[in-house]
Length: 154
Image (cartoon, rainbow, N blue to C red; front, side):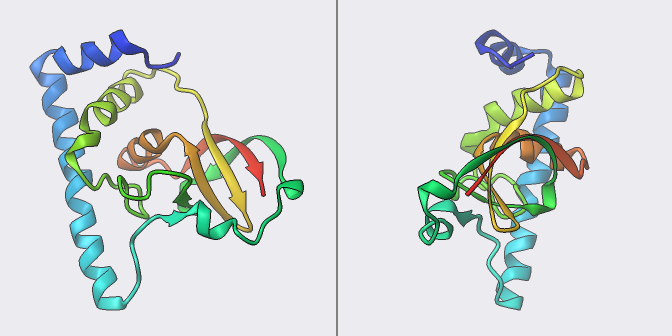
């Protein structure tokens, strides 16, 4: 089942206990990038999501093909087609503006509601997110290591 507008509104106006645990989980995910940033600065590594635009410049449109539904290790997802400023390379949210969507996905996940597979683009051995940033972030916050994805290879 996909998250719809009414589910999102229920999340935002749901009981206070639901709101507290999702806020706590989100805050924990939001704080983690600060630690990751410090480690990245000390080790001269970037914790930013890679941009698909820069990775795909050498690829040709004729080389694109659909691989189908796959189970993908979240650790192999390192970039984004569009949302490089909303999540870090570990898919921790980088700002508060993602909270309501993130919270609704977290509550659906907690309730066992089936969410659609994320959409990924595979370039070499790295995956880039086309759709599903919040689902990946929430799955990671829940300690999951794999996620179902519709994959297209470039």
